[in-house]
Image: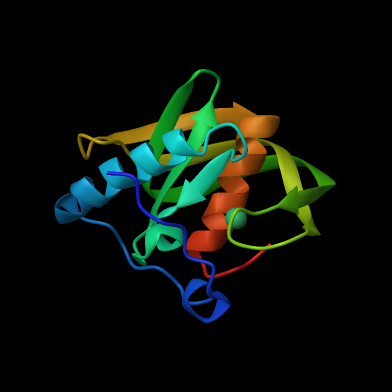
Length: 136
Ligand SMILES: [Zn+2]
């Protein structure tokens, strides 16, 4: 189900908690909501649709990748990026990494390890900041 986007910084600045199997319907809603915004939004975190759970969704080529409890296990190639956010106005600078390796659970709650670079890696890092309550 497509949900409305939270823009309240006080809500978004709080850290999210670990997601469980019970949160899979929320992960589906996050997928649907990102799909609805895909032309102007590279990724989304669950708190942006009102739930402080560690779930993110990012556009990965033509598909949408949903990750529960993502953890950065390797990073390389730091650079300064300038990013916008669907929940905030304007653009802000952030330190990002060109190449990252992420451990996460997929929509079947199975553990996965993925290597990403470029735009999708940047989107994952932005959404993982949202999970920590960091607004950029
Ligand atoms: Zn954002």
